[in-house]
Image (cartoon, rainbow, N blue to C red; front, side, top):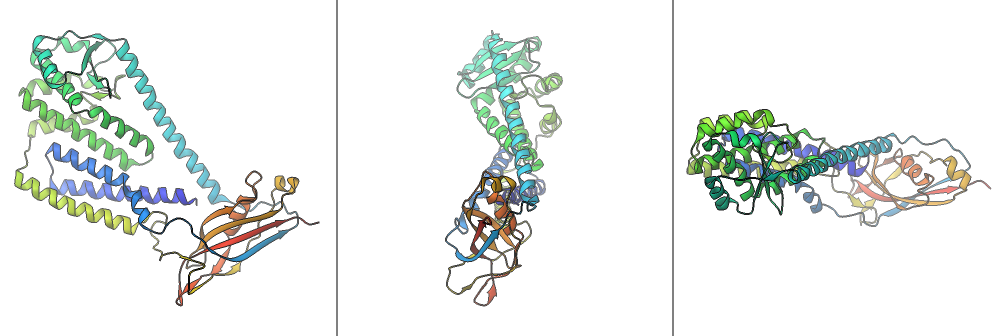
Length: 418
């Protein structure tokens, strides 16, 4: 299997373990403070994205290796060597890239739709009290009205815009204040930049349910935090909850990609948080932070050690040594599969040598096979050489009398019969 694809699989397993531990730790710790919970999940997300940096601590790029084998081919046999792992890896890469492209296309379409909504909207005429709230909280925000949306939405990086549905002005004055305060708080906190980063992460990891869940958790925590901030400034809890319910049917409208006033999947948790309003004491919060930091630090370190990038999941390997290192006995070839000419290479009458590097594991199987000196990428001889070497078997190399993974250099010669 392709080394990068295998690393992606291990990385996905790392994400699954860390996010699962983080969820259990949050549940056991009974974290109810929205601001802390939002910071907690953002930190978990950043730690997960930084996991590949741990791989840089290990051995570096391929170094010089000992040349110890030379496979040669004479004749014109055109039977191909099976390369199912390589083909399967190629298909998987195409699927991963296609899924991300579809997701990014959907995001771009949403961005175009938001721009269209803004262009077709009109400037909102706010009452004096709403205008005073806007001037105090987010004077840079432009408030507009659109007949094409069913709920408020705020978006924009440099030019922040809040779109209000026409139904907004049919609400009572107190409900209008809470809704406007909610969207203005999003603008003041510059939450749109976080939304964009979260959606990009979701597009890159569209195949990973744990990442979906993590992004949802961050978004839910942010909405609960803004809900609490609104109630702190405009203590009309009943009017605010009524507004949440009133806009519930519009949560899947054309502005769903924006920082919406409501997302249907968050409605129940947000209403429950508003009703219960559980407050953590300062002492309990400090102890919770300390425990979660220790638990998650241990979980991250343990996961990185148990599932190192670049190695098969669940298999531990000693450190790879180079074939030219002192005291290293090179592996011995015990089973060889000859590479085959492809019909295209035969017709082109290509001859020469392909040089590869590979790591011979302690069980005698090669891995991390890479072409260092190419002969033919167009007609498939390089691929044939890799496919053949992947089927070789060795007596493992040794260092100080103990079997160790050894990186070696292999030459495959392609020659035609005269």
